[in-house]
Length: 89
Length: 272
Image 1: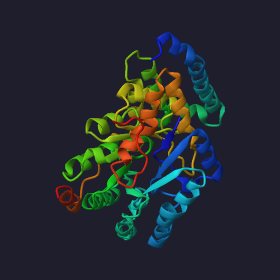
Image 2: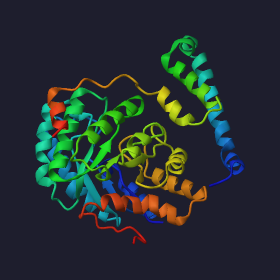
Image 3: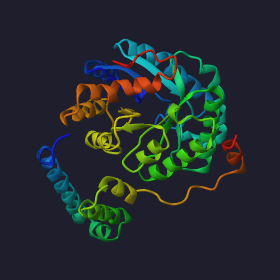
């Protein structure tokens, strides 16, 4: 596996590009009609802000934790009697 | 470099894609039955689709030197229609002896509804009764973690199912542990935007190891490309992994999983 220094050198420009791209996305949204309200209130944007906080919080497992911010965490649907019986066969 | 794309929807791809894959060293593919981008109106449409998978695509692939295998099922999205699904499931058993059919797949969940779960369980039951390999589709985006949890629970609770004969596909950073710790094979799908990128795919290989993991392009009618498989193999090599390790992930592992079916003819390289 490559060293940290080599990994950073290999990916830094892409990381910079991704940060700039997201910044420009936010600017574009802000300039659009009604965009400023969305930046403040939209649930999807709120999740993005949480995700960005995870990226820079210094703790490991960032990708998996960001994935969970964008995941449905409600309980599964209740099961039918038929389903329960077929599972135990 | 010989490669296998263990999950690709050739019915949605052009002859240029076959030619591209052949040039890149892809020697075999497996094509699960899936949602074609529209809901079909009758079971007879699926009968035609299954003929396309079992007879038409193998011939088309062979023209480019690619060995084509397939899987049959009603997919998770159209499984919301329970009566249609049951008609389609009845079409499957007579086709299971076809020399190109590796098993039941890609079955799973889409929006994690009760109907989807019912049909998923009925197809798991079919696979168990007929001793078929299983290829699992896990949901997209925000539904993935919940759906993968439900699927893993159902499979673990069915004593007839051997985890080593099931591949849980479209795993990502937050779901691969669920599948791997339960002993299932895992699939990583490399997409430009909506699943795992080549870089993240290699991150997962480095974090979780290369045992019982297959990488695929799942190229279909949407934003996807067979090049994603090759790009991931190249990224794996660029990070210093050896030709032997590349061969293991991108050729030997699919051979090992699919080779549990006597119909799969390719052999792992340097296998003892």
